[in-house]
Length: 362
Ligand SMILES: NC(=O)c1ccc[n+]([C@@H]2O[C@H](COP(=O)([O-])OP(=O)(O)OC[C@H]3O[C@@H](n4cnc5c(N)ncnc54)[C@H](O)[C@@H]3O)[C@@H](O)[C@H]2O)c1
Image (cartoon, rainbow, N blue to C red; front, side):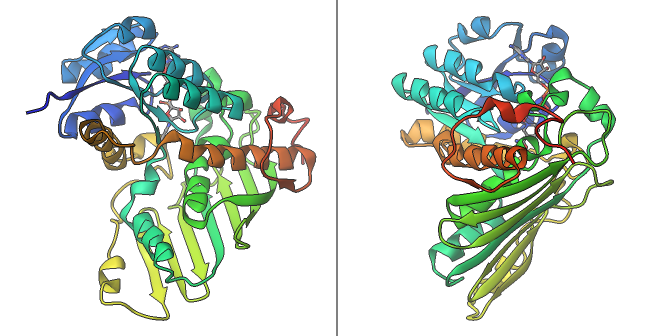
């Protein structure tokens, strides 16, 4: 029997317990070590799993038992960590967003390619049953021409959440609701409806005056296919309600709320449609009120897939290359809000978008 794959977690913060649990519950995966510059945090996470602790990535990368590293550090620190992992010959699963610029994202992709290691990304909402069903229906042509693809994320994050760490108060580190929370659902829209050609976005801070980041975004997307889309994303709307992802085509409409399929209607009904309407569970928490509420099962699918991909010598289910366009859309949204006009994609990096409130004022 093949040996288990050893995992290391870099970053033992808010979301890391979910990674540890997902690795523990995956078949053929062992949590070998946890690394955090705050050793106490690393210990707390590692102890229940009997994992080793490190306070530097360099030291963890020297551990030969580790084959895969989950990069769970703040958004602006992903690139350096992924590059170091790749150079040490470790495969990587990186948290979203991949990085805060396209240049960094390309460097991560290139370094992993040069070193022959796999690079996956935790945009784990893609694996939800309701999303996979929508993807399949698109592939089968059941929608006909896709007309509209929308995401509504009316969430809540407290001032305490934003104040819990310096990076959560800096747009350049990726604290704004657009790149931090809404990233998942913008990713789902492009995953389902294809590439985006043009964006127009408006960003405001409507309920967190203590913090200099946008807590609310409204954006209009034009897909290359001609479909239209809306994104409404907020972390200001207490207590937070389930995200809705809606697809409308000539011949069908589907809606996911949270992770549950709440509408599945096609002009031509098929025998399996009854089962599609049952997909997803209402009880599964989806982080509307706080990241700590998130379930670990979607992460577990991504981790299990990495173990299987290594055994089967194939690509992972969510290569980070497939998430680059999502970052490009998000950066396009920031550019549009800053310049107060629509932006055509592709875009180039533009560091001036991170200023606040100069670039995005009421
Ligand atoms: N996929 C999801 O659904 C989801 C949900 C929440 C957060 N995230 C992502 O997970 C990542 C982490 O988010 P979080 O909320 O847990 O952040 P956090 O700030 O709570 O935790 C980050 C940890 O990384 C540690 N760290 C930072 N630099 C380090 C270094 N150089 N070496 C070792 N340790 C270092 C910090 O000490 C901290 O403990 C972010 O990219 C975030 O966007 C993803």
